[in-house]
Image (cartoon, rainbow, N blue to C red):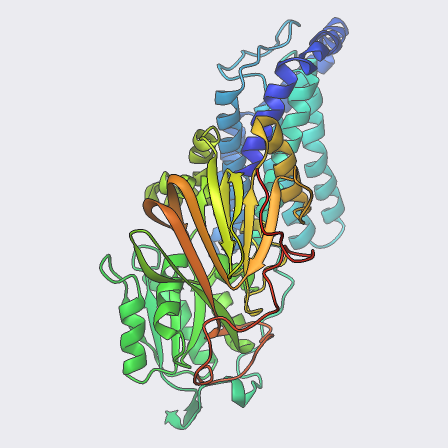
Length: 563
């Protein structure tokens, strides 16, 4: 989302005053290259353009993805990384060209000009996404003397393609630079999403595990001890029989008896199934689905002492990512069971027209909720997280809301903002930390208000988000952070709202309160609170954490400030 917005804003910046004054110098460069053309370079650059053309990119990417998915070891994560990089770069490119209309250079064109804007260069972006991804895979998978050569060739191709597009009069220099940035950013995001955690080791089956962190053993199947009874609550839309089979094999490897399968439905997204599992004496509930399934199971398991394990199969998988779980469901479950159970907080949300509902990751009002509401399930299934980009662009021009923020028992704070997000955890997809101080076991909720000043403020907000510089700043900073045990938001008019990615009817209020240590969940590290059983009797909804709500990293929040 942020990448598309940033690219659109950069495109408008270089095509409108005052930066558009660079245009004569840019045309001068392509004119000089055209004046020095010769048959040899014409031929070489023609082949380079073909290597980065749509047909070649689709064909090479398709063959590479197919090669990664066949054979005895199906490397679906590598396939998703490569295919996702190419597809996401193309989606961002098309969205940007719809918003930025820039003519081609004045130099004679050696290729037929496509009907898209000159900004950014699609050939260069596609070359970075495809051949850059191949370079990454070659560096990690190829052994021997051939690896350096393949890596250098794959990494050098996008640079050569960039030169060819300038030489052939198809793009301005800033178009080429934008293409390099677009492809590089997409590659980095996909690497963070699919490959960044490949270095983590999965404990071998049968490895020693702390007895205090497991449901009590005491039954035996075919002569071997089993950890207890497990129930797999799965979303049949997202989870197929092959994935369920892999989940069951992981459970068996970690000493669990054959689990009971329970499918979610439109009427019961998992809460009822998980509650039935608790009533039937289950020791472990495996939530196999997206954020909705995880949150529904968390609601039923809160305060029961029955542990939750997450096998992420959705688009966002926010809680799973923030607990350090990889994106592959079977590997995530293996890592979680190989670690230990820990206690984490949950939140209870309500508002006008919203009954009390458990939140495990994040809730929001404004831009983020509008984007989620306008993203169809079919688009998410086909595209993954890039499906959110078109709705985000459509809603960037929405009128800001006036918010009244009440933290615990403090005096109201008044702001104008594009969106407000309350989180039990802090990281979005790709490891981007929207709430840098959020921890799932600190007994606090974190709030961020995003209020860039007009279109010119969005590049600063996007840059801060992508580089991790979202700590609280002064009154003009695009991000403002707070922490409290209870957070009450009231808008001046009905606004889109969401809880853990699930859209709610529009409304004016959103209230969240923390439930400390409410959920026992398996995590790879087993960090934080690692004790079994329900929370102590009489445990308050919000344990005391100081005398006043605080702006993250600062002194107590002032009572009021005018926007």
